[in-house]
Length: 238
Image 1 (cartoon, rainbow, N blue to C red):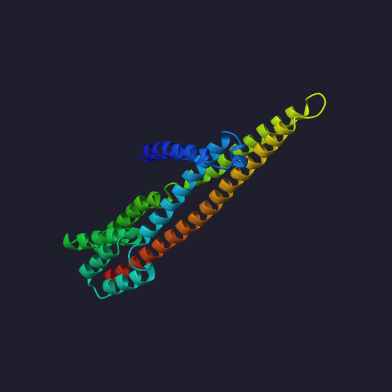
Image 2: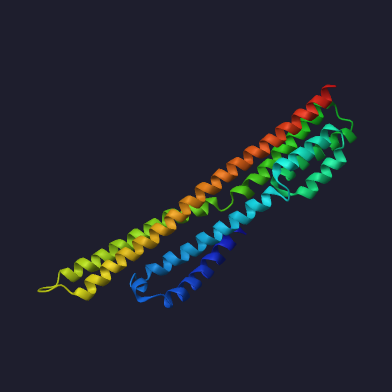
């Protein structure tokens, strides 16, 4: 499914890039066909950035995470497990999904009259399994962002080299250099350099921001799971 989405995005981005290229000013189209490739990967980059923003927003859930943790932990402390479960269902998001999985395992263990040690073990196992399912969801397309940042630099460099080759070819004419070809080559080199750097810088900044957000979010989920486990351990110890 992910590969299919990437393929469709590539085709759509290329079509849009080609159309945009046809209406760009001449000083930009002088950059040559590689400008279409740079516009294509820039469109893909912006699409992935928007997707990551929406996904991480969805992963946080409806209410701010600290407020959710406060309500959830208070309900568990007061032994209102059904209420705590309802809070998770209302919150949604990755943190709620992890805690809900642990809470359901704990409630299931109580209904099955498992020993306290087994209930805790099943709860911890369910939390870890839920985390393993949520992490790929949070990290999805981050590799694509870093790849685009790297590729855009290479494409821009390739355009720069091709432009410089054209410039030197214009200067190699006997007599006076071909001024038109010289100017076109220099323009091609600079435009591709600028386009490649823009996509690369945007991709690197976006990648680092999202990696930092995912790390912070994972830490927050671990913190919530730890508080939950500590509370039920205290309950089982009584």
